[in-house]
Image (cartoon, rainbow, N blue to C red):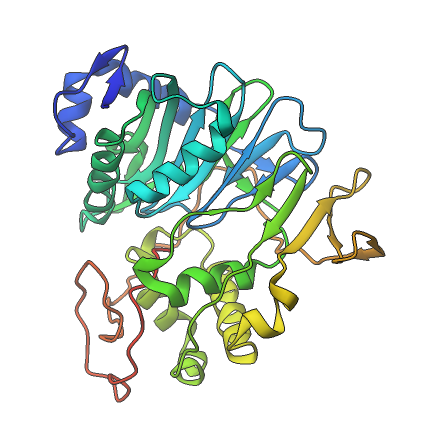
Length: 373
């Protein structure tokens, strides 16, 4: 039907975040309460990390997962949905959202018992107010998709734009770069994740090479309590060797619309390089990574919290732990490097925003429009 705020339906889809905050002052106050919370550094025990264009659903009785979350939002948003009748919670990392994506997510959240007359409570967090207006240009279409859906969606929290932005030395920076939700209590809080989980290079490859046709992916089976990656495929990248030859700064500037707002630049570029190497080594993942078209399945070890790989005959690899993508974070206030960056990007990247750029000798190496990182 439409988005609702305090039970009041919005007659039209929002056209600007400022207008929405002006009309509903309680949204601004709710955002302030989230921003004022202490940022939590989440470890691997009891947590599940969601990456770009992924979502996960679980419930209060899950014995493995207590916290769903994501980070490195920058221009993207985390959308949290809760079915207040069943207690199930969904968390997604969104840079774009189609009606098909929304249907997939609501169906996963509500199962077979869903009726469009049921109301879902949603929270949207991230997407700071950058100087190029990238975040708002991405979020307004997402709000339009939510508004035009056949579902009743009660907007409980909107923590985006100016409410999550601080200006330091004239440079806007995000105050909330990551989010966690406790599925037992419903508490939503700023967060960063030390452990990203297995197959982050493969998961990133899906969005890096697939462009706009890549939809939202459900990565967790809350009945079996298993992390399930794929199966999916992606197109071989002809220019992968050239990308790997580029400097970290070039990769950062080319694949992030707001590189000055990336908190951990080293981790950002390291992850993308690992992804490019995987694309080079596995140009056909359906053959080499998803054997017999089976998903890559993991389950959390109860003692250590590490994801353990499950083989296809339903037995477990004995003590074979899969290395997670780990990042070291401090609990100090957010710190960003604000050294000047020149915005030069590969013209082959057909992005929805514009940078200054110089001609590159490999312009003919076309890439699909990739996800925002």
